[in-house]
Image 1: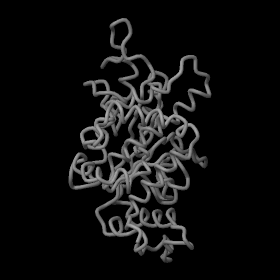
Image 2 (image 1 turned 30 degrees about the vertical axis):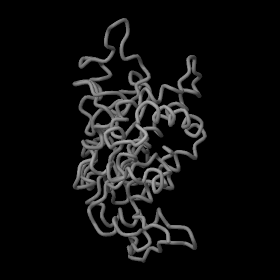
Image 3 (image 1 turned 90 degrees about the horizontal axis):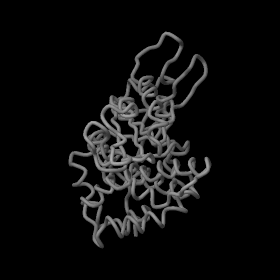
Image 4 (image 1 turned 90 degrees about the vertical axis):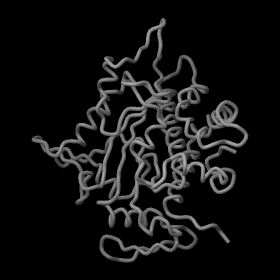
Amino acid sequence: MKDSQNIIEYARELSVKQLFMANGFKTVWNVWRDEIRSQYLSSTPTEHQIHELGDHLRDIFRTTGKAGRSQSDVSGGGANWEALVCWYLNLCLIGRRTFVIKHHNSLIPDPVKKAITVNYGSFPSNTESDLIAITFPDKKDYSIDKGLIQVNDVNQNEVRTCSGSSYNFLPVISALVSRDFTEIEIHIIQCKTNWNDNAQIPMLWDAVYSANNFRNGIHVGSDGYSIHDAARFSYSFVTVPSNQLNKEGKDQYKTTSTSVLRVKNLSGGNYWGTASKAGVASSVKELVERNLKSGHASGVLSTIKQALPDLETKYKYFGLF
């Protein structure tokens, strides 16, 4: 008999498997996995070791870096950085009511897609939402087996959970999000490899999302869904960064640096793939407790600990073993 699986854990599995379907991520993963296992995890990993991978994502990412990269290499590196952050966050979120997805139409619930749409007059434009984290309320439908969910769509028609042997993930999750929209949290996590060149982008998008109204015909949301109606919304920036941290003995990122000031007040915070530096950036590992804490009554270390015995079986799709 197949193990029971709730819809959030199913979404997590779909999200992580989607990462491995990209050629770029598949190409670098074996190098990253070997680095993770040899340098940062013991033969029997602890919850602290898993969590603290966030302090080392920059070093892990750079093991596959190349000098003299072309623009296509840079673009591919950006996609791989998004994938690595998505992989890490989902690993830390096992057992919690939050999953993280890369921007992929087959995985994003329709109400979320509509809520984050920014409209310029009659022209809709989606943010550069590299990753989206969704936190669900503590309700029965999110803890029972996904096949037992009974939910109606927006027209009050019952949504079938299966078509033949296939699970109807997007219709079911979209119906749940629509029904519980005011209790759901949406967190956009923009990932960029280069900090200096990209810091103004999250600053401007966060400003757009934070504003309640505009004079020039810009409005956020469509079809009755708006981030302002969700239980919580945040916009975060996560960078490698690929830029040097120290040059000729001098720190390149200070509290007064332009790139730091641009993301200083983001609603979801500013993070990077190394240890936290006060006033500059927090480690990626802090994002879970800071923005995604409401997805479980216990702390993140507690839920990671509960998942550890199943990393080689139930959660083998993470590719760690």
